[in-house]
Length: 434
RNA sequence: GUCCGGAUAGUGUAGAGGCCUAUCAUGAAGCCCUGUCGAGGCUUCGACCCGGGUUCGACUCCCGGUCCGGGCGCCA
Image (cartoon, rainbow, N blue to C red; front, side, top):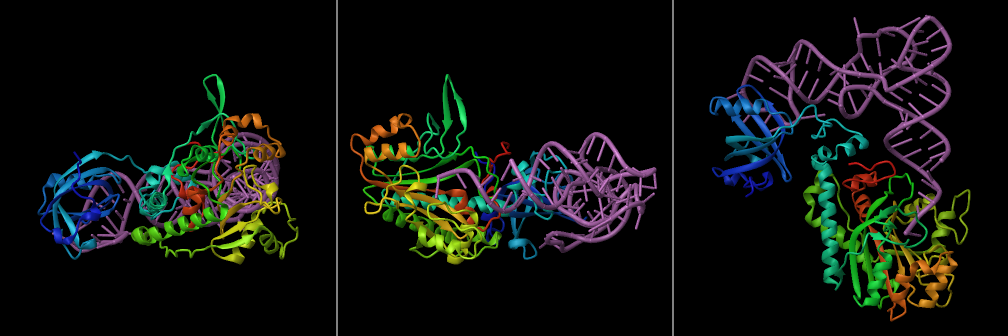
């Protein structure tokens, strides 16, 4: 049984006379003496419940007058078309039941009239999310995931779930969270990379996963978190060009879907979403370096990674989504395939938004010997990768893939200030609760 | 890690050595009001991060700490 018959957003003035039950939060109570308005809020909007002193049961009037804000109520009543009411209708109640009382004062203002710092908001995220403008971000995030899933299924992908508890590091570079696993040492996985690749050997051909990744870096920025959601893709018998094409289509598709299906949430956020045009511009690493080194005091040398300043300069110059391609092999992970003709250049790429990096990917090394060599060259021990390397010994198709940060897609799409705004319960260096 | 900025009622803020028994808004409690829609009016309640120092006197200045925000770094 569901207590409500309708969401507030389902009700139309044309339903006048209908008996409905609404359930939600007492958003506001405006008592004008002879008439009293209760604004009930649920996930889909607001409904005005109107009580006229002369016409309504005294007990009901008293109940409403003494409701604390954010108390959960069940309102049974009749729809009345009323021009003076917001959205052209109001509810004339016959029964109001308090389901759960809200204490007061509230930890923050859920109406948005009075602001709250990010820290305050995150501490009381359950109240923060009651603000339609905050919820809108996550409704859109849901739409992004849905559009990507649709896109992947339409393109022959199999959705997979790889383990998050692992025995070894994936890539070496980043720090891992150690965990206790009975009598063994284990880690939280930094990326599904190795498992996606194993599945290519297994013959799944095209896989995707939307899942959590963990990085134990003590970074402290507006675009990094220690737990993130990664949208990962791996495709067999494909090169990096093919998966770049997939990636740009996936991103454009998400924008398109959101712009069509989330108009009300975009309105709440006052955003006019522009769908990026594909194909995205390809900028080689060498070209990127040239752009970055203009008007710069300390030049970045060929072979160095691009720093934040460089990303910003290039982003400004390009002004839309773009790929950086032809990275030096040396600064890409060991599983990145070098070009055959000039092995110092790799088949790795990054997808960039003018504000920040969104994804990175590559055609992968599928040759066992080369992979072992590359692992050694990067100062790691192939023994730790045996479970992974074994899958390269018995038939591994050439393959390519990428990982795209969900939070960053939403952050850049909605022009949010902080990645924490795009994650329900962010985990950063200091924050572990809620 | 490092550099810059900050910490005042539940929330968001004003404050520049005595003006502070601390401003405003929001909120809460109560009262008035029949069409509000950020309703309005009146009354009441509620705060200077912690420790040390300077000074006759510190919310205010100095030192240390804690926490928060931002930049960079680390990170793909």
